Image: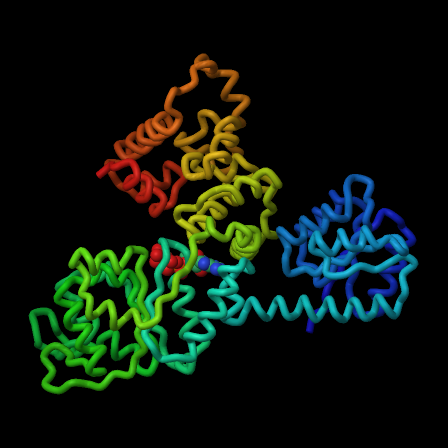
Length: 478
Ligand SMILES: Nc1ncnc2c1ncn2[C@@H]1O[C@H](COP(=O)(O)OP(=O)(O)OP(=O)(O)O)[C@@H](O)[C@H]1O
């Protein structure tokens, strides 16, 4: 196994040298920093298996370092070096997220035990990330409850219906149910019911025999066949047309499919998981979804909470996304500046985790020095909580809906724009309407410039296609 790195942050040279020597004997490669600023740089440069920080540093506090690590490098355990007998400082450090503390003068045997525990912790966190359960990030109460429910329903064979808004992680949950259950050795087959043309649906699901209809040039196995022994995940199940709902119900009841043009039925052993961001019960009431099928697929209902109801998960999710992006780009993970993190924490994320991923991906492209500032996020003020929206609006009065700056430069600071703005004192009487108008104008301009090519327009606006679609729907633009 390759050697692991430890980081020692202390302004006293003696302590740095003592810890470097001691940790070196424990087979760790040690790097040091004397200030918070240096520590930031070091942390951005590599992943440390363990970190020690002094309480008082020339340009800040050890608590600041602990908070930074907790928010941006949650896999790295950090211990505080405290003055002997300073219980308050030790308690504060633990509250801030340190896993332990060492008092000066450092007792070598205590230090050795601490290092062993820390490395074990670090290892556990790393392997947790690579197992299924670790893929579902979030330690909030609703996420822990969800994780427990997933583990329970994974053991059962009952159909599970996963409800939740768009982008909350329904497919991820479905995958975990499969991976944690007895069918994990067999295929997990996801199917987006909204993406298959109605006339091809039967053949896609059940397969067909050669020559059974025009264009059926060879035998084809259906999705049920592909999922044999495993799990079929019906995503966007609300989009199933009525005639398919009837056929699907039959297959679920009979546990057999008949490919188009085949004489005999084939037995299928498939667990059905389904999901939609729509209110399926309401669709049943309205008559557009069959009640009998609803009861069949909805034996167990599982709800994935929206991100705004578990905001405490945002830092960890963000840090994992930035780590992945860093790896993809061959750079250290980007940092999030405190005001940007604050804005993320108060944003409502109508597109949930997927939107967080998109926001961060765009921010990484826009930011300078691998550090994401408030301007780089380009969050839509209307979608933040009321108080946060008011606060942010005050900082970025004309930023919303404007075309994005070139990718390599930082967004124009609001102050610079204010200086050019003659109508500085002209406050809109209806802020929301004014924002919508600006947004509409920018979107229309981009659509016209790209001859209504949504993908190209989204690119011009610095949005993902999904984000543009969301805005078109919100503004009622056909
Ligand atoms: N708790 C989580 N931890 C880590 N990643 C997550 C989590 N929740 C969602 N994601 C990620 O967010 C993205 C969207 O998740 P997913 O596709 O599962 O959402 P969905 O609810 O099925 O969306 P849709 O309704 O649009 O189909 C994926 O990249 C997924 O990996």
